[in-house]
Image (tube, rainbow, N blue to C red):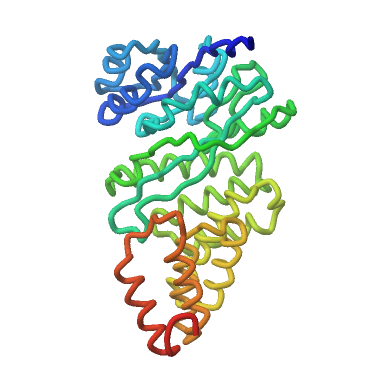
Length: 337
C-alpha cells in the first residue's frame, strides 16, 4: 500500500496599506486553505490591521521605502510554511483553486507554480478581463527572494537555483483594475513612476523596467512617452522579457498605433502579440479593426472569425463583433469566401 503524500504547510504572505475595502474578501477566499497568514503592513491608517488581526493574521509593521521587494521579503522571512502563496489585498483565490492547491504543492520536484491572474477590467474596456501567468506559489527557501523595487519578481531567484517551475490552472481573481478611481489611479501612477525612474538610474538597459515605465505612462494618457519606452525595451535584450511580457508590450504598441490611425503598424504589432499568445482576443480585435480601416476586408474578416471562435471569451463587444462579421460577409459574398 502506497502511503499518501505528507501534507505541506502553506503560508499566505501579503503586504498591505490602507486596504480595508478589499482585505475581508481576500482573507475569506483563503479560509481553510492556508495554515498561516503573514501580513506586512507598511503604514495603514484605516482598519486594515484590525481586519487582518480579526482573521487570525500575524501582522508585522514595516517602514515603506519605495521598494515592493523589500516589503515582500520581510513577509517571506516570517513565513513558517513549507510553501508560500502570495496575494494582494484586492485579489481572491478562486473557489475551484481552493480544492486543488494542496494537490499541486504535494509534488516533490516542483519549486515554483505559475498561477493564472484574471484581472477584471473597467466597463469601458473592450475586454471584461485579461489573464496572465505569474509565479505566486513557491517553495519556502531562503534562496527564493523577490527582486526589483516595483513589479517585483520571484522567478529570477528560482531559476538561478535551477528550481523547477510549472504552469497550473490555479486562478487568482484580481478586482482592483475594474474599480480604481481616477484619483486613485493617478496616485498609484505617480508612485510607480517615481520608483521606476529611480530603478532606471541604476539599470538603464533593463528592458523590463522600460516596459513597465511605458505601461505606467500609457495608463495616464502619456502615449508618446510610453511608445518611446516600449521601443527602448525592444531595442534591448528582449529574451529577458519572455513571451508573456512581449505579448503585452506588442499589444500596447498596436493599440497606440491604432489610436494614431497608423493602421499598418497596428496590424504589424498585433500580429507580433498573437505570435506570443494566439489566444489574445484583444490583439485579434485590434488587427481586425486596423485591417478594415484600410479596406483589407478579407484579412480583417479572418481576424474577426478568429476572435469570435476564441475559447477565451473575454470580449464585451459581442454584438458589435457579430455586426462587423455580417458586414464583411455581405461584401465578400458570404461566410468563408
